[in-house]
Structure formats: structure tokens, C-alpha cells
Image (cartoon, rainbow over all chains, first blue to last red; front, side, top):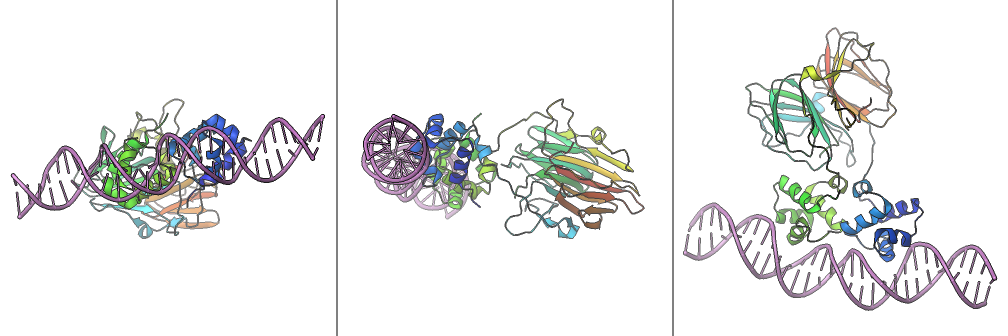
Length: 187
Length: 187
DNA sequence: CCACACTGTTTAATTTAATGATCACACGCG
DNA sequence: CGCGTGTGATCATTAAATTAAACAGTGTGG
């Protein structure tokens, strides 16, 4: 599932009608290297790739932006939701999840989460650029995001950037059910 | 607006409680190099960075996702959710929504939807590429997506591409509550 | 107290990327 | 043809990434 860096770089350059030498001038790298990279004869360092992409006016994150979307299954019975509860937690987390072999690529993931009294996810830090949101359906739960904490009850909601460290703790004495979503999936 | 590759890599590794050597084992690179990269003493090649990120289970594109806004509203009391019920529907739809003036840009929208008996959204078709998912919390509802229809109950879920025409109808005699999410916002 | 396992860092050798110049081909023009 | 200028690819050299092994620090337990 590798992206062909060389191929992609070449088409980006050609899309701007630049020659390897012109781009080399804009990028402060040599045309020879651009040639090598486009042929995948060398794997450029991040710093070098960044120089080249600067010349193209493209950011690294844009360069690596990928897209894919194929679907089939639409409806999911509750017993078909995939159990993805982390080992340490009291409670359960179930995901709306397509089993389709290798390429189950979605931009949205929906979770059913049930936290028993005392459940604690611990601090979590996801790398992925994503947003995470949820609505409390039943019970109460303490949600900590970054340095802010709050106890939420039925109907309350949260929405934050997934890269912020976050933590869920059921500090009450009844189970708590949360329906949450994040984008993109982090698995 | 460079992101600190080394620092970012380190926090990602630590978020998974991995030592440099453990990650090295998973990544097929040496622990020494991981040390160097984390200190920004070398700029890894794309292939090397990819190996390392493979060991962390994250993709290059995810890695380069840019840092963004931090200080924002995170928690939402139920009475603060914005009412966005379409005029014709029986029931209500409330959105987790930030009022912040101009730049309320999110990739995820979370909805609390309540359908009274007889409620019917009618056919809906959104032009833009997005995904829509939901989990039924209470009651039953008939969900039609494209040419497929199904009656879902508590705990059941759905997930589909927003470009498919879709429709929700409460054909029972009790209210139905659905928590749903879509990405990106469609308003 | 010493040995052991673990952490991250550093050093020296090797492999590889990156440079600057050259090569080879194509096109237009006198 | 013969020359100038453009393209991308290639060759030796240099600079840098990468390796493998050693170094230094922190517990932990016999």
C-alpha cells in the first residue's frame, strides 16, 4: 500500500510544467537528485523532500494525503459490532466496523461505549489528525481533555481534537453509555 | 510552520509505552537511529520514517497531520446543543455545535436525533463526499439507504456514504432516539 | 555491593543520499 | 550539416544517514 513517492512527485512537477532543473532551482536541491527520487532510486530525507515540496508550493502533509473509499455493508446489528475494548478497561467498546479484508478505509468511525463504575481509560494520545465527539446516553462520566475536566450526563456531549490527550473515567456508581464518533478511524 | 519531527515521534512512541529498542525491533531500524531522529540529529529518509511509523501503526500521512487549534469549547450541556430540526419532521435533531463566529471548521458533526412516531425525513441527498453513521439508542426506526431498507433497534447501527439517498422513518408507536455523526459537516 | 536488565545516548564503520559535472538524446534554426 | 538549448539520466565525489556496538545512567534483586 505504499504510495509511489517518485511517481507522485513527478506528476506534481509536470502538473506545474516545471522541468527538473527549474524545480531544482526553486528547491535548492540538484536536478540530479530530483531525477533519482522520481525514479525511486533514492529515498529522500524528510528535509530534502520538504525542500522539493516547498518549491512546488506543497506541504508534506498534503503530499501524503491519501484517499480511498469503497463500501458495501450499511446496516449493523448490535451483536455484529466489533468488540474493541482495551484490556485494562472496565466496560466495553464496540465499533461499527467493516470486516472487508485489507482495505477497510473510512473517514468515520462510530463507537458504542459502555463504562462500568470505576472504569478508566487512562491517558490516551492518538497520532492521527482527527476529531472525536460523543453524546452521553446513560449515566455520568468524567471526561478530561488536555487540562480540562468535566462530568457529563445524559444528553451532554463533547467534541475535541484527537491529538489532545484525553481520558474517560466513570466516577459514579452506575454504568455509563456513550455513543461516540471519530474521524478518521484510529485502528 | 515546521513540525518538530523528532519531538513528535518521541511523544508518539511514548504514548504507546515503547522503548526505543522495542520500537526498533518492530520497525527494522536500529535503536540508535531512533535516538538520533528523536533528537533531530538526522533527517530520516522517507523509507526509514515509514519503517518506524509502521512499527507505531500509523501512516506517514497521519504523521504529518498539522498541529491546530487547542483552546476551544470541548464540553456541551444538553441544553446548549443547537436545535436544527427540519421544519417538517416530527421529533427533534440537536447538533453538537460551536458558535465561534467565523471559523467553526470541523471535520466531524455529532447529532442527537429524536423521532416521534410517524416522523419521516423524506429522501435526502447530499452532494458532497462524506460518511454518515449512527447508533440507535432507543426505539425502532426504518432506515433506507439507496435501495436498501432495514428496521433498526437499540444498539444497531448504520454507516454509509452520504451521497447515497437516505431516509429515516419512525414506523413504530414509540419515540426513537438516534445518535449519529457525519463528516464533514453538511450545513 | 555487585550483577543484571533496562533505559537513552554516543562513537566509529559502513551504507546511502546528495552534489556538481557530464552524458545522451531531441528539437529548432541558420 | 553544425551549433545552441532544452530535456532527463548517469557518474564520481562528498556529505550525511544508518548500522552495530559500546557507553552512561537508573533501578532491582540476590
